[in-house]
Image (tube, rainbow, N blue to C red):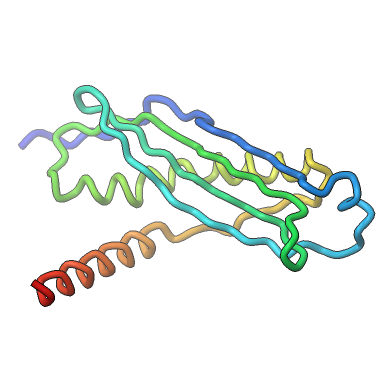
Length: 150
């Protein structure tokens, strides 16, 4: 087998959203918002050895049940993988590519929250390897549950 090749072709913001639903009154509210974060990713095959991975990060600054701000960033990249075994592609899709994209998404979230007039939100590093392993374990459990039911 030939030497595996992995490359980053392009990194870009695919989608971006900022909402401050209670403006301007939220700026007079002295409460510090509680930060809620959701992260997910999607893979889109392209032609040849190219594929796109999108990392979606949603951050909400909540006070009770009211959002002071909501930011949603879809940070994407076009990647190339050649001579990579099919069983190793999941590692690229679920660990390597999200690790490449996360610092860009983190910077975009912090910048948008600051531009909205709030203190910056600095997202902590994420262990995408652990998340990938958890997704695999959940998929195995679901598959075994389906087999038992049949």
